[in-house]
Length: 75
Image (cartoon, one colour):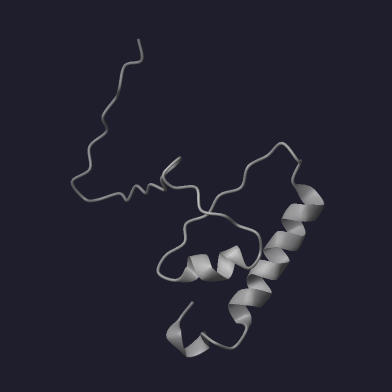
């Protein structure tokens, strides 16, 4: 969220709607994860999200101009 919009309840409103959707539409057996940058984890915890580290770690991939396709063989 851009700084100019922080502290106005918009983040809570967004997460509230997301959680409402999850409760109404996601099967009990599913697992939903998100990435919490900075202090965002404090907001997410208010809505029932719990840290997964060290059991799991969030990862990202960003395409770079020099990125080449690497194919991994699975034995």
